[in-house]
Amino acid sequence: MTQDTKAHPAPKAQNRGDLKARLVKAGLDILDEDGIEALTLRACAARAGVSHAAPAHHFDGMPGLVTAIATEGYRLFAATMIEVRDRAPATPRDRLIGICRGYMRFAEENTGLFTLMFNTSLTIDRDAAFQAAARASYAVLAEACAPFRPVSQEPRSTETMIWSLIHGLASLTIAGRLFRPDVDLPSPDIADILPDLPLKAG
Amino acid sequence: MTQDTKAHPAPKAQNRGDLKARLVKAGLDILDEDGIEALTLRACAARAGVSHAAPAHHFDGMPGLVTAIATEGYRLFAATMIEVRDRAPATPRDRLIGICRGYMRFAEENTGLFTLMFNTSLTIDRDAAFQAAARASYAVLAEACAPFRPVSQEPRSTETMIWSLIHGLASLTIAGRLFRPDVDLPSPDIADILPDLPLKAG
DNA sequence: CTGTAAACTTTACAATGTCAAGCAATGAGG
DNA sequence: CCTCATTGCTTGACATTGTAAAGTTTACAG
Image 1 (cartoon, rainbow over the protein chains, first blue to last red):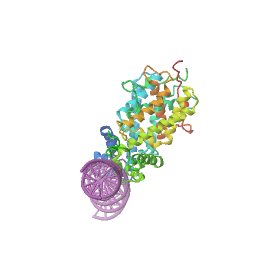
Image 2 (cartoon, rainbow over the protein chains, first blue to last red):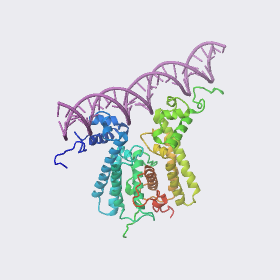
Image 3 (spheres, each protein chain N blue to C red):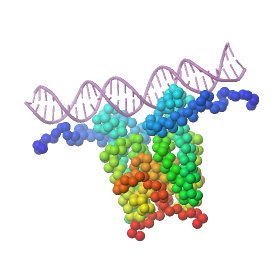
Image 4 (cartoon, protein in one colour):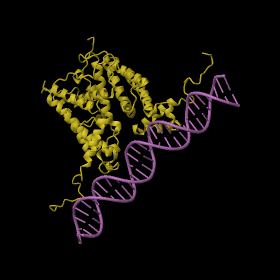
């Protein structure tokens, strides 16, 4: 309460150059440049210019660091979906297609990060910041589904269908498991496999 | 060419107890009992009763062993889909729903194995047996989609949609990423999110 | 100046995948 | 029967990785 008690025990921010953020940044760069196999705790530390034991003072070990990286990933993920959506025409269907194209773009441009974000065995799912970021990205997609009638009695069935559809398409595409025997054309666009969705008011 | 040249250099089968198959079995059991984190080369070897270096004589290192396990996984996968399909009524839609329920059942009952099978960074995707098994399981799903009209000009768009839809639902479900904020009911059934699919002959 | 707490380093260790060398058994050729 | 080469596996070693303990540095309150 005293005016200038900067209170060193208080975590007033990181001391020098915000190592916590630098470690996450290092992880994102490694994922981007060398893929998920290259993402090790020691590599992140080296890239951030600290010893290999430094991350343990800011994260709960390797799972904690990975969770922080995934959390940042979900923020970039939501931003990508929003960006593509806002360039699309203002009709509900075009906005939804924009969200899905943003989903695909993020997955294809950030393969390692995307894989990380949806791999339960790597992240600490109960982490609060992680959950918040993941749910926020879900909310972006849910919002784009809101104008449409549910496809069944199930509440939120449209969101579940779209979320499953685009996530499956993205996962299979980046995993190279989307077999297309006779044709050798590029991955299909979401508009080619999106079923008709009747609007709510209509 | 001589009648009884059993030709010991020929790989006439495994010598003692078919160690190759035993190692794959050990891997499947470990996945089933202790999850994907417990799947190590040394653990498989120990479970099969051999030294930790034995697998290298039958597989191309750890990726090779994992690929063999995933290959067996795809066979079980196809068998599960077929089994559930054949218990369903004979209408095209019921058969397709059966395939999808088999897909979900396999994913939920073999979480670690399912994750393995679709993780490109673990398997050797160019392996011939692996590709054959993966494509065979795809063919089972494609067959169930065949009676329906394509959802777009894209050839095989129905298969792609169904494959994406069910794979996304399965992946998100086992990853615990299928957020259902207001309701706290179990995972949705495929029939609740499967859109209307007009038949071909119509 | 003293002491304390946070940030970070150094050191050590267990687990893992991989490789090289060696050993044992099996069966062919003399 | 003897030799010997090949296959199947073991032993031992090594680099990499995550983690924990102990030590060091730095900043700052009193």
